[in-house]
Length: 274
Image 1 (cartoon, rainbow, N blue to C red):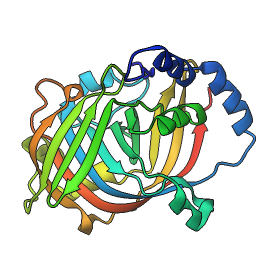
Image 2 (image 1 turned 180 degrees about the vertical axis):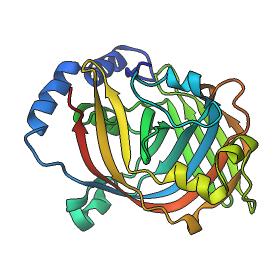
Image 3 (image 1 turned 45 degrees about the vertical axis):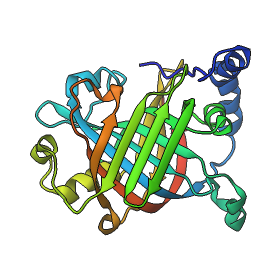
């Protein structure tokens, strides 16, 4: 499953930006330099995290990840999750109070869950800023980011709205409206896999390692993360309307919940041994 970058608007500038984003030579130079330097911990006061999760046919999902990785599954199904959120001044933790001067882009991670507890595999990452999309591709292996033509993620009272419109680019399509609810019932397919609502939320939200295959290297990149979500603050959501082609034509209703705020940290990034 290719993660090559295509700019959302056609034309010469978009083609030049795509060449820059997809440059393996530039990535090789960056690895040679950065491998000699200590990793700078990144930090963000993330807010309004909305999780959408479908139980997908495991064989279909397995074909979307590299050979050798084993997805967690139950009764032939595996979770496919999208989490979308607003950063809170995303940047180096050592910047301290000066981090408040840094921007707060929107981000959406699309992922599967691996057999090894606490590990996820990224299939897509989307941000709403050209600078962040290109920057993550040039300076990182773990986030080959896509830039959509339009990216909306906002909360209005009890309702969340998310729109990712790819335009002519490589970002995936998502349109979702959800609303805070009082219910804590699992959809049937998740109820078969998890004992209760809290167990499902803990499995889907509390992760410590993200992985992705690096194009042209045949190696995996790994990133350790800190995401200390307080389960008693998680909000159940009801779906109002959701459209997500990547989830599959027969995906059905997703399991939805929101995390109002969490301190997110990226602790490390490394390449697995060849």
